Length: 492
Image (cartoon, rainbow, N blue to C red; front, top):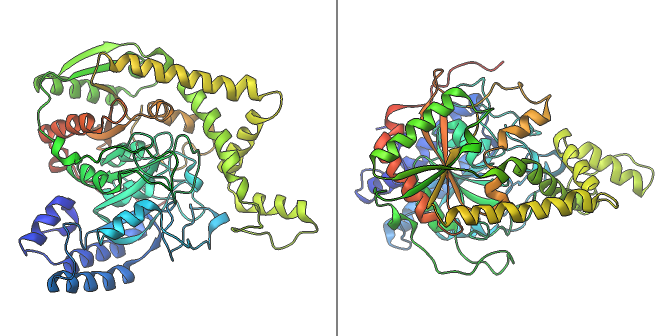
C-alpha cells in the first residue's frame, strides 16, 4: 500500500479500521517530502520534524481517549500567505523573508481545532501575484507531471505538493484563478468558494474584494470535507457571511439527471488549445450520457473581465502593499540617508519585478485624473459581469468552461511577456469579479500526457451544486485511476 497515493477519506477509513496509525501516515509523507522536494521545490518551509513529534503526541492522546475526531493526525500543507503562529509566513517574498506570524489565521485555527498536522508552508508567486509560481523569491516550483513545466500559480506549491503526493491535501488562495489554474495544470481538484464563505482573517491581502481561501485536493470528496472544516462566519472578518453551516459531503449524490449546464461560447473561441477544446467537448458528451442538459449561450461581458480584473486587483494591491515600508515590519534597507530613501530602498529591494509592476499599475489607475477613467469604470463593468451571471443562473444550474486555455507551459516561456502570462487567467477571473464559486477538476490529458482542467461555475453559495456535478463526472471518468504524474524531464 502506497500511503501517499490515498485520499484523505481513504486514510480516515484505514485509521478507523486500525490498518494504519497516525505515525505511519505522517512518516510516509515526511519520507515523500524528503524524496521529492529536491525535484518539485514545493515548500518554502518544511515542518517535518515538528510534524513527526506532533503525530506521536496526537496518537498517544487518541489511544488514551483524551482527544477524538475523524481528522486527528491527518497532515496538510498550507500556502505561505496564511499566518501560522510561530512559523515563517513569507508570501514567497524577500520583503517577508524572516517574518514569523504572531497569530494563526482563522482557517489555521479551524484546522488546529481538529488536530490536523501542518507539514509546512508551500511556495507561491510573490504576494500571490502570478500564474506560474516562477515569481517566488526563493525557488521555482516544478510540475510533477513534467519537471520542465510550470505548476501554475499563484498556489503552484500547493497544487504541485498534492499532485506529487507530498501532502494529502492543501490550502490555497484564489484572487483570479490561483487555486483553479494550478489545479488544472497539476491534475488535481481546486475549489474557489463563494466570496465571504471562508474567513480571510490572517490571509495576507493581495486584492481584498477578490481574495478567497479554498481547498486543493486529490478528489472531490476531500474537497467537500476540507470546505466543511474551513467554511463559516468569523466576526474578525467583516466580509465573512453569517449563514447556516452546511455539510458539503452530503450533496455528493453521483447523479446529475436534469442538471442544466450552460456553455458560454466566448470561452471556446480563438486562443483555446485544440486538445483542451476536444477534452471539454468530450466532457460535455459525458454529462449528456449522465442525463444532464447542455446548452450553448453567450456571456459576452466575459471579454472585458480580464482588463476589469487587472485594474481592480492592481489598485487594491497598491493599497494593501503600502504597509510594507521598511519601518513597521518586513525587509528594511541597510543603508539610507533619510526617511524617503528608507522607503524607496526598502520597497525597491524587498519586492520583486512582478509585484512592482502591479503596484505601479494600481497606483496609476487610482491617481488623480485617471481614477474615473479606469478604476471607476472597472467597478461599473464589474457590476455588469455580476448581472450577466445572475441572468445566466436564472436559466442554468452550472456554467462549464475550460479552467485554462492551455495545459501547463514550459518554465521560462512567459516570464518575459507579462501580457501573455496574464492571458492564462482569462477563463477564471470573471468568477472572482462576480464573487461566485468555481471548481476545477481534471477531465483528461493531452497528447503529451499533461492534465487538462474543466471549470464548473455555480451561483453564489451553490457550492453543493458544483461539487455534486464535479463528483458525478469524477466517478464516471476515474481520472486518478487512469493517470498519474510521471516526474518526467529534468531541472534545466
